[in-house]
Length: 336
Ligand code: BDR
Ligand code: CA
Image (cartoon, rainbow, N blue to C red):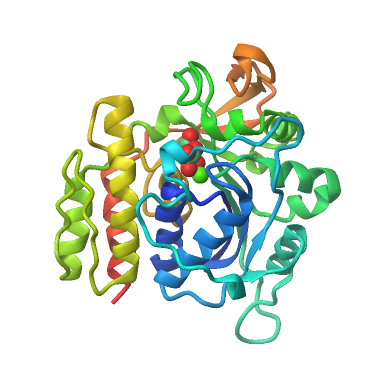
């Protein structure tokens, strides 16, 4: 199977992505490293450990990476993801699950892990999935660019191309949160061979995918657990026999309400889930080569402007949105 290292700022939609990674077949989650964004990197690690735990995954290392952006002060988003990042979900403290290590060493260990099976078996390709600000990737490029090159694929949720922002008029959250990191990353990839360029899901594509309460009710009923009510203005303390659905329902209730308050619709955009499912090969999508300029200051902070060649990214276009939810449902059904 393809291996994945997930760099996350867990976050409600990061939690959705992690549940897909844990449940989908054909993908081996090797490690999770965290970054500050939706919440602090420390809380993101706690949340990540909790999601993995709810999925029955106890052997994937969880490590705290960079705790502050490169040059700007840290801002988090309790209004979007709740005071500790997972909405109304109860998240136990699991300090024993957080390893004390340098995130870059954890990436290296994942890349160096020997293949399973017979001697001489081929090491599977490894994807680096990033669903938070790009602070850790920019730091890795400074410290060990050759290590970054060893990832066979890099998939990023971030940016907003020819499309409004969700943080300022022009900026998407992950890019706004650490604009210097994003600029460092796109500058690094500019002009590299097409196959080496990161696959980037911006808001222009993630906002075409709408999760409705019916999706979550459907996942619960097909797992044989009670359907959550999920009504605007209501907070239901949801509990069922499946820890992962208990956690996701309580987290997503908060996210539905946030979207209603801000966008006027009781639907959610599961940005990070979309980036994750693209790795699995079951959801078809197209990409387009784009040059990327990241704005740093003032109104331009975090804006991702498309520039002429040379390209810096493979921008995702035209995702099969229905397939995203079918594929996530498949992954969730693996939790019994
Ligand atoms: C991104 O910002 C965060 O709020 C989400 O987790 C996602 O990674 C969307 O702009
Ligand atoms: Ca995120």
